[in-house]
Image (cartoon, rainbow, N blue to C red):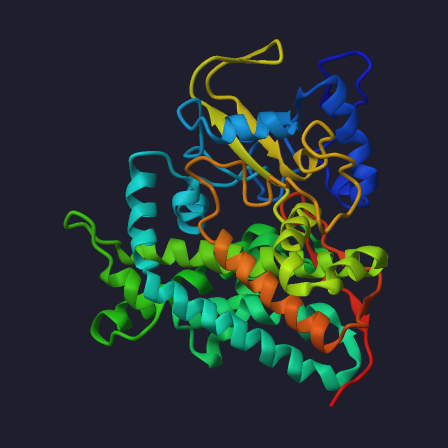
Length: 421
């Protein structure tokens, strides 16, 4: 259970998967109380998913206010990423193979992120964005005659899958296998994902699938360059340094997860919000082109697809009267920050015209700000631009949510619309 720092703060186990199985509005009643009364509070280790020994699992401090999340995100010298970024604890070798520069600190983080960023040339970005718009049009056109179905499979899953695959150069025959493995890396807290098998075993297989595929593709692209991001990655060079195949594979794992899951789940949550709030849908559709950019920011804030990340203190630091020694695990709750009424007026109001909207959907800023933020925005603008033009009457049913403290995921969600030729 939580070790509350103030007597009148409710004791809730934020690390329990049962807690994360509750609706977001219900969970936020506890976060709202923490934001008011205990903006920093210490808790026992989260529920173990990896079979780690007790001495390998760490208690943590919960950071629930918007400004605190931003401050910590922008102070990597005090709050580092190199000792883990996941809420739940994991073996170091798993972090090395799956999180790339996300779980690194300067100078190694600076080097790797710089090399990866150099692969995103203006020509590459333009090619990717053109492909996103064409693929969104094709996906909606293919779905239009069906009249509905599972929105995740029909629409939400498909654009991120095709985008990442086209970007990196994944052959069509391998795409479903790659996406299925990426899904497993963020769904092992949900019993449906692993059944009777130990989660660490399922994770290991998924990680092997992605890293071995990326390593083989990198080796192939060295001798057979193509017009794709994998070719750019193997050719990227700064001051005579290049990415190793292991570094490319780790980035591929990160890209496969971050590029697929976050956009997919934001798409699903946004359609549900537009269905529940018809006034906001009507407002958006009055001028789709003009209002879509602001709406996309609200989609991301509302969904908060990544709900938690962690940092570790590198020195003693004081927050809200609490003194944290070096080596303390600090967990940033992005969904809570995106519902903080100190930062957002009426934060539980879905408002497609919200301005300003400096949400935490891509992190709190600093050196680990999401590298793919602009591509995610392009995908959301493209898919909703097409959806609301071609199927303006589309309605989403109640979503079936993933039980996870990391990804605010939608497993399934029915949708209906008038079939169109």
